[in-house]
Image 1: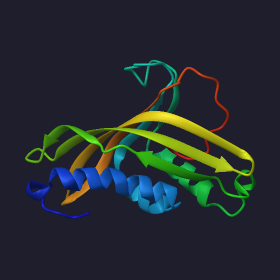
Image 2: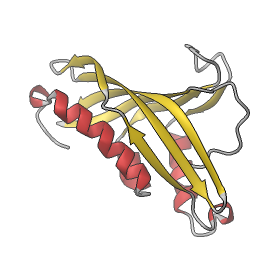
Image 3: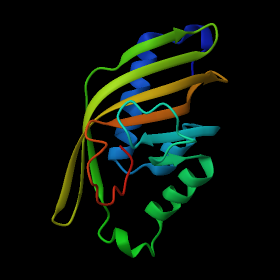
Length: 164
């Protein structure tokens, strides 16, 4: 979505969150990766209300390099753990906009959702809250950070192959 920073509306921000989830559901990982700023981080805390991704253990804390590796693996033809490929489905509530600063080009959303991931006979359902830290860069919204807080973050998990 390309608009002037001063023209970004609440609806643009909300549509961005829905569009990102749709890209993941449809396996459009290269497009999804292009949404990220080079310095962006994807974070999934291990503990409820965890505030520090660096000095505390997390389920996931990936920078742009690690996200690119993940996308290469998911797109790879020789990724045997992904034959057949995992699929996912996001069911989102309407995102809340916690920070709306079009003049600064900064927006923060908070979205409750259910996430389903399936492969062969395995299916997992996760209830979560996703916080998107978005920036307007050259007229487009980009992801500076995404934090995914699982409702049952302290449970034992198998492999989460895709990204909620």
